[in-house]
Amino acid sequence: MVMIQRNNELMVADNVLVIYKGSREGIVALRDFSVNIAVGEFISILGPSGCGKSTFLKLACGLLRPTSGRITLDGTLIQGPRPDVGVVFQQPTLLRWKTVIDNVLLPARILGMDMKKSRAKAIELLQLTGLEEFAKNYPSELSGGMQQRVGLARGLIHEPRVVLMDEPFGALDAMTREYMALELQRIWMATQKSIIFITHSIPEAVFLSDRIIILSARPGKVIEEVRVDLPRPRSIDTMANHIFSELCNRLRNVFGSIEEKRC
Amino acid sequence: MFLWFFSISWFNIPNYILPTPAGVFKALKIGFMGGLYWPHLSASLQATLYGYILGCGSAFLFGIFVAGSKSFEKFVYPYVVGFQSMPKVALAPLIILWFGFGISSKIVMVAMICFFPVFINTIIGIRSTDPNLLDLLKVFSASRSDIFFQVELPSASGYIFGGLQIAVVFGLIGTVVSEFVASQKGLGVLIQASSSNLDVAGTFAVLIVLALIGVLGSEVVSFIQRKVVFWERRGTQTTTV
Image 1 (tube, rainbow over the protein chains, first blue to last red):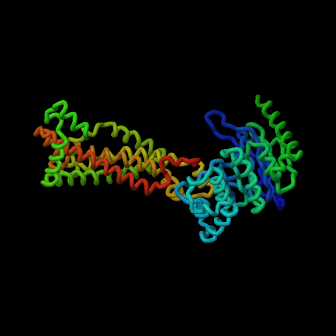
Image 2 (cartoon, chains in turn red, yellow):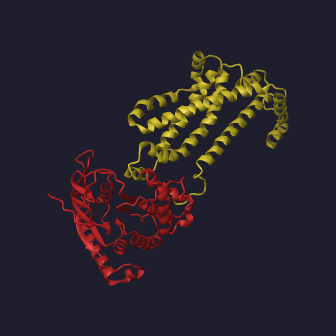
Image 3 (cartoon, rainbow over the protein chains, first blue to last red):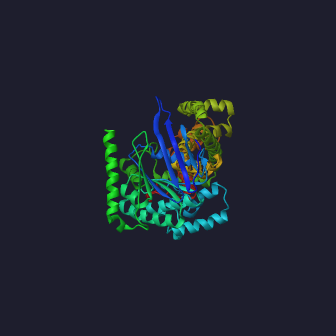
């Protein structure tokens, strides 16, 4: 099969199968998994627990290779960890012994990037995430939301082609989550990065994304792709919009049928 | 202090069971001013210090190797635990046989005692590194040394210092035990000498000196710990996962 890369295709997963070798037959995490992500898109991956979202994340990072099938980034196979991917985890996992700005610079230091340029970029990113005053503080002096913003800045410092976010607001309280969603939208619109956002929250997915990909329960497979045609920038008012509620309902129904199948 | 003095006069405890604070103080004064204590103090301190450095240093290095390699761990661990289970007091005569009556056997004894807490804590500390952090570094294809120095070692330092603190106290005990068995100089020797002379005040005096050294040593390690592991402060637990 010839892969023709259209110009704005960023990441393509084609018929991916991932089996974790366990003690018995092995666990099929993803099967017949295919997805296309365009440059500059904000994609959410929505699915029940255990549906393979984290597996997909590991594939995209290059920390895991598919048992069969292919996954490519910018036309080249993802065969191992690569510096054109940025990651933001659910827990900020900052280095507590380094300052905020040194934490943001960590990828740059490890990748051996030019530190002078990177430092300037780091300051820019801290300004973007509203943390410039805290550059010299230590993580323990920041709130959970602020730490996660540092994590976000860290995910962007090395100019990745795509940023993978694994339920980044999952550990935050509801109000902070809403605030962070607004912030993330702002940052995304400013940086025009491609973002793959994994979440459990339907409203969050609808609010943030251009497209939502719904995974079935294990073995994970794409059941549906939903386009979110709400105008940007979206605000809290957007959440009162009827299109918003319709989309949320539609997604809930899809989930309802997944849950029924599971039982 | 008051309780001590008071209970002696009230219960009329004879001097050979529980000395008066005054008696102990006098013994301390004579011991230090008169010059009796100093060479013994120096001998014990030297042995403790060298043994501590040897024991903790080797434990640290061994710990790093074992934490890094499952096969090495399987090979080494049972021996370490088995060795630790042997009472050092029983080994003391053997050590003296092999290393002689001088300071070397004391150093070996102290090193052996200091080894285990630092060894275990180094391993636990390194293994406690946040797996998300390790994943993050793997995404950037970080080198093994980057992973170790940037992430694993700092993560482990709190634990390692915990081990170092324990080792201070154990080490001192090791010195004294070694001196009990056979030595010519040292605080343990002083204790034995004053015990056999029924100089209880003298014994107490030396015990107090030992306790003070222990506290001092512990405080020094604590101080260094606070400077090095500056990010771990008690009572300031925010949502830093």
